[in-house]
Length: 92
Image (cartoon, rainbow, N blue to C red; front, side):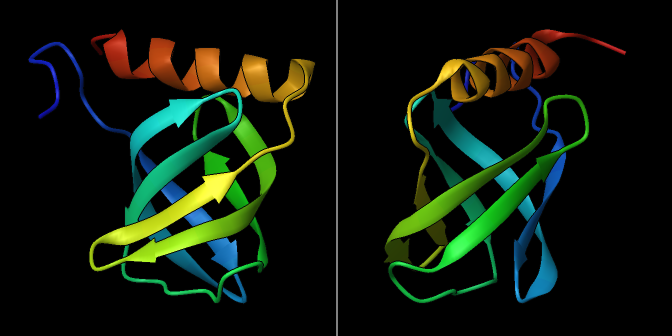
C-alpha cells in the first residue's frame, strides 16, 4: 500500500506502442510499473517519467497488473530513481 504522502505521476512505457504506466516501486536497479502493456520477458523498453526523464530497461517479469523492469545500476539509474521518488513526494 502506498504511503499517504505519495502521489503517482503518470509515466509512459515505450514497448512498441506507447502505453500509460504508473510507477508503483522504483530503485536504482529497477521498477514495477502498473500498465496494460505486456511486453515479453527480455524486451528492451524505455520508461518516461514527467520529472525524472527517461531510462532504458529490460522486462524481467510480467504480472496481471503490470511489468517489472530491470535497469543497469549506474549514476543515471540512481538519479532517475531519486528524481521519481522526490516527484511523488512533492505537492503541486
